[in-house]
Each structure stands twice: as structure tokens, then as C-alpha cells.
Length: 206
Image 1: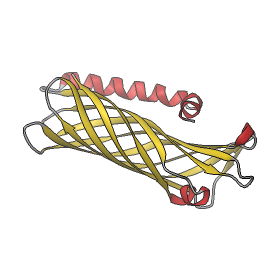
Image 2 (image 1 turned 180 degrees about the horizontal axis):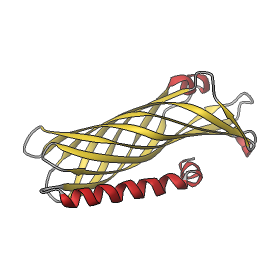
Image 3 (image 1 turned 180 degrees about the vertical axis):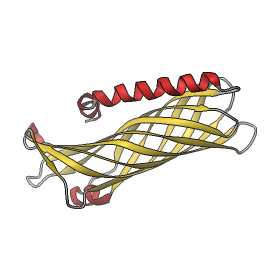
Image 4 (image 1 turned 90 degrees about the horizontal axis):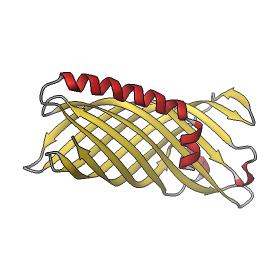
């Protein structure tokens, strides 16, 4: 399911690369800037109208996170990720729902000790994709929208090299456009989606 979302939203990766390039350029101009690249994985607990209506179970979340700290406490961050959960459809078959997201926003870092930091990362999710995948691929639904995300990471280590983190992320958004069998339509009814993720990550500080 995660692969399906990424394949359907390849244009979002182009946006991500462009935004990353902008951050790299800005970071190179900032004195004492610190960059990192992180891979995170965790358990996702879906909610909202989508989660409640489909009765989604606990799923898996994976995201790529890149950021710059321009000072000791102020920075910027980009997140590209996807979550997937299963549910039982009306025929009793196992189906799946996946949410892909792309967000950008500021980052504020608090030092909690000699080797521990707390990264607070509020982000605007300007691309929120949803795919409802039924058995056999008939009547699959693709939806798009936007939202926001509050990411939090407790990072162990400041210096260059590999570090580890414990992540607590909350995403909330709403789908406004859908597509079924090639037909596109506006979504006027309540169609909110949210998930809370608890996970771990490995990052490399440059």
C-alpha cells in the first residue's frame, strides 16, 4: 500500500526535491547551520471520519525527514511519508487504506541535557493523498486534500554522525477531491482523516 501511494504521487517527490534544494541553499548561507536526514518508522493509530467509518486498525507509518537548524534552536523541516491500515469491507474481505503526506514547516529545538534534544516541528501538509484499496482493485478510491502535522522528536546526540530518536507525531487533514474509476468529484461531506504515530528513527547529522 505504501508503494502504491508513492507511485501514484511521484510529482510530490519532485516538489520535495525542490524544497530540499531551497533549504540546502539557505542552510549553506547560514553560519553554524546543522543539517540532518532521518528515516522513521512507527505504529499509526488512525482516526477522523475516515478512520471511524472504515473502522481502521492500527497501521504502519514510514517517513523521510530532512531539516536544518540555522541557530541552536531555530530551523526548518520537510517530511514525506505514508501510513497504511487494514479494515474489513462489506463483503468480509480484507481491504486497506493508505495516506501519503508531504509537509513543510519550522522547527524549534530545546536542549534537555548534554546529549538529548526535543525537536518540535509544526508543519503545513500541503499534499495529503488517500487510497482505499479493495479486494481485486474494483472501485478503489483515491482522494486528495491538505492538513497540518505536529511532529515531535526526542533526539539522542547533537554531534555529526548517526543519532537516534523517539517520535510522537500527530497529523490531521481533510480530503476535498476524490476519484473512482477515472471519474473525479468534489467531496462535500465530512471526510477528515487523522493519525497519531509512535515510532523510532535513525538520523544522520551532517
